[in-house]
Amino acid sequence: MTATATGILPVTTTSAEELRRRELEFHIVELEWEERTKAREAEKHAAFVDDLFRGQIGEAERTTIKLLITKAAANGQCEAMVYSFPAGSCTDNGRAIENNLPHWRKTLQGNAKQFGDLFTAAAKPDGYGLKAAIINFAGGCPADVGFFFTWEPSSL
Image 1 (cartoon, rainbow, N blue to C red):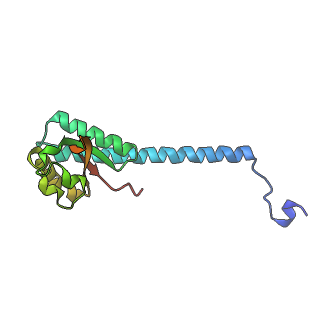
Image 2: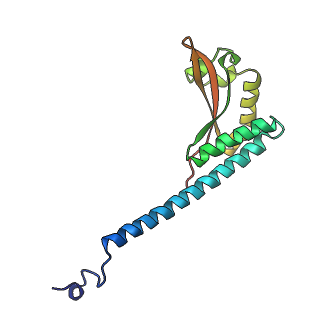
């Protein structure tokens, strides 16, 4: 019984080396596509940040936030810390944030409150999320709070 007589095997066979080469080529194309997708996501987030904060904060701060979000998106992450402030800027010294209580936004004061209000007005409607977390402790008490912009991963 021969391969050509039964139709079980093709007349020409591919060597293992050729299959490995094809797999490698496919993997390279896949990686290039992922990199292009991440770059598009990063550009989209950077443009959003630029629009969001224009007129609200200085150019240097806007550039820094844009860089943080762009870098996170380019690395395939879905969040970036964009602002930090002392926990003492909260009416409860950051306890609601530490315990992830639903009313944590009501404890914000000063610049942190302004940042949160700006986010609610401009970023939330575009699908971004704002997460707050205690990023440093001093003597067992919250010391610093970080605001993180969050977004859904790309569905591409």
